[in-house]
Length: 200
Image (cartoon, rainbow, N blue to C red; front, side, top):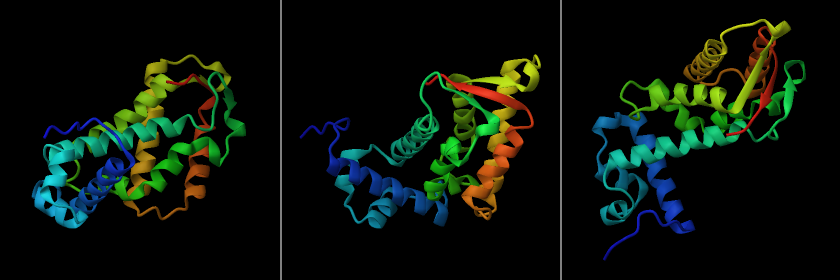
């Protein structure tokens, strides 16, 4: 029997989510390299044949988990805006940083960044995705239109934001989501006058 692994259905999607959730929890318990397919199916209460109907091995599952979460991150960023909208930093508010709300909502996944033997690719692709968002979805304007190398400016801003997020995660989200967003807004106002959302 040939199974189309690209086909989607509510049941198939639910199974995928259960397997991804189990992998996330098991990485925290024992580290990615120690996790086996048997561990995953036992934790998710499935059998091995169900697993192999969805994924070739744990590495394919890990790739799907990472890709789906980072694609969700990219999609979440633009939700508060319409294409072409210009936003002045003095008008920023909590909904402006939907990216933070997404990270907090999926904190069970993003906490994986604290672990040494974690999801393959997470430590590099998470910050690179933030940079990609800044590079592709926004046009920034500096305070007083000070001329700068905009590629450097976007890297500086993206990796600065990533550093703040990383610190927030490593400190168990000690600050509330609202407090964290306000801190980011206050910092943004020190070097950015406005930005335009151009979409993907």
